[in-house]
Length: 359
Ligand code: BGC
Ligand code: CA
Image (cartoon, rainbow, N blue to C red; front, top):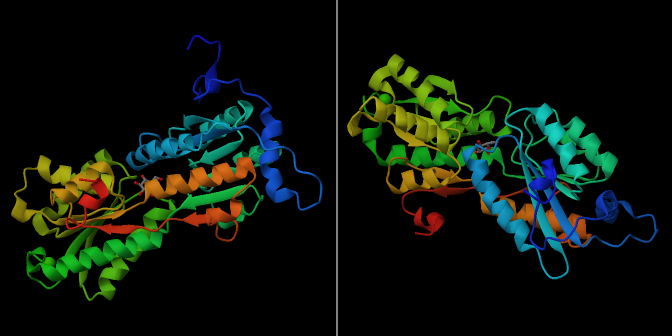
């Protein structure tokens, strides 16, 4: 960068290259839409959408793919009447870092924030900052508790229903087990299974596991739990955990339920590393439909996955961001209880995977 901009501002890419102006005034105007029931005239809406996007960890596979969709959707909003800029920040897992980054984004003039919390139980500092500067926040993917979202009118959440993804994973696994008697390799009438879980405390981790297991049982599948490992959504960690679990249970494992595709792929990596032959492998199920996950489904390495609609989430966030900044169209964003947008999950098997990859 040779234009004299520094820090947060250097990452701002303006498609028009115009100078930033009005800063906090514009941000304050953005919120007038839901504050001005008081009869005072509304300030002019700003001529730009300046979005600040804060990630808990940009090396997360699902989120890095979501980020591409979100940028695309936000830049699509640009037209001859207003410009769009997007600045992204990566907290590398630390809420303290994210608190500082959100402050930088606000100081740089962002008039809407999209925040993927590092610690979903600790958004208070960010909420205080945003309220103080009247900059609305769309939280996404890592859901704050309802009480936190109620702290101020300018707070929203876009994501998906964790329970739905777990139920779908359970239904997919039940169907596969009912269709293929070979999955019960030791023929004891039960399915010996292992769970790989995401971060403790994440709304998607425990709920996905519980609802997948419950759904299998409801579908008449007898289960025997062999082990459960936490791998924090991460492929390499899942490989390590799975190597340990395999060393404890050898070829007794018949089913691996992973809270996301990256961990399912890590489990597959573990078996590959140990040179297991195909007939001694369990069946693997993931959630997300990441690029690598879909490819593994197409190759029948992953029995099935559940699509976490990143395109839908990104489009909903962009539409909501525009409505908040431009003070129009909030009714058309599909907000539930004035706060929430949940996009539905979808089942992905080898039969329909091509409709997700576009192949
Ligand atoms: C996704 C995971 C991702 C996590 C990050 C979940 O909804 O399924 O792949 O790592 O969100 O917060
Ligand atoms: Ca068995």
